[in-house]
Amino acid sequence: MQGSAVSLVEKTTALIESGVAPDLIFATDMVNLPAFLGLTRDYLSDVPVVLFMHENQLTYPLREGDQRDFTYAWINYISCLAADQIVFNSDFHRTEFLDALPLFLNAFPDYRHSGNA
Image (cartoon, helix red, strand yellow):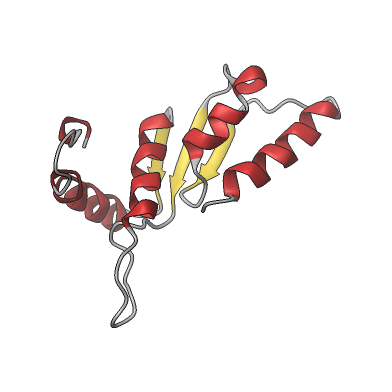
């Protein structure tokens, strides 16, 4: 997730330089979407963006003894905010993510942004 935006920017830039411009961006939850959009705003600012939430890092099952790295959950959250449309692979995953999101945001000591959940 950390490097995905830069890798996608490189491929998108090469595509645009070859004369092909996308009419839709369809990204998965494994892309830091705000980073990608920030790095491509000069040539993709008017292209609609769909985020496909195949899974999410807020409720993804962990191995016994592992602790959740909430950095990735935050990336999922801000990617949802940056997308024009969000689609989930199932109602179960959508409900699970949306139910867990307020608890996640309320865990922050300040600037919780829980009104966006």
